[in-house]
Length: 98
Image 1 (cartoon, rainbow, N blue to C red):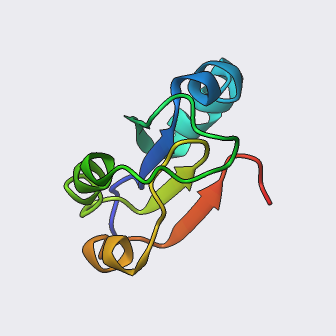
Image 2 (cartoon, one colour):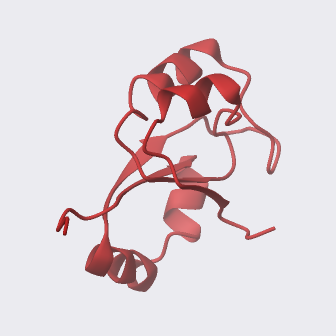
């Protein structure tokens, strides 16, 4: 049986990081997963994916070992290229939950 913890990437801009990813929520996530914040572009229209190719390249370089990606404002679109690179990926979620 594997004892490794799931790796979760939280991909959003600074505003979402500061206002939506609360300390109690992150503490709950810490109980069962290792996570990191993937900083995305500020100033994107609410819930719009970032068109930045530099940001997408950075994302592609960081998704190979993640089990989950949680996205929100400013995150690059999770497209087929990202899915192919993220071979361990089991779930993609969205901060607002829709």
